[in-house]
Amino acid sequence: MYYKRDLEEKIKAYIDKPEIIAVLGPRQVGKTTLLKKIYEESEDAVFLTFEDIELKLLFEEDIKSFVKVVTFLHLFSCLL
Image (cartoon, rainbow, N blue to C red; front, side, top):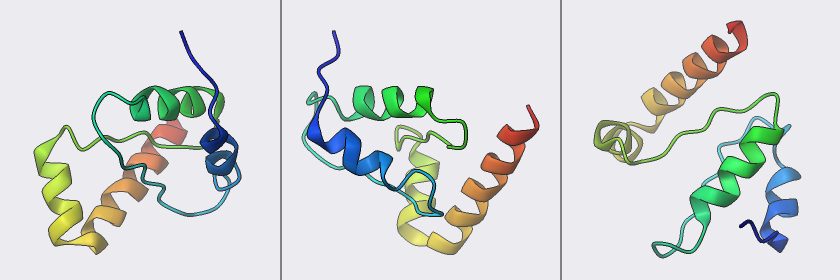
């Protein structure tokens, strides 16, 4: 079951902007569920999680390369 949150509208306000949106918080509070719902409704977004430790390390250690990877993934997803 999905419960709509106030944060959903705040995030949607940034969806069309060239920004990286990060949602942080404790485990099991619905962060992934919220973002997957927004992602499914979006035509122009890339959904990443830091479950992939290499992606998380890249974000922490080399943000410029991380942005390049995200940009590549976005462009690739537009071709599908």
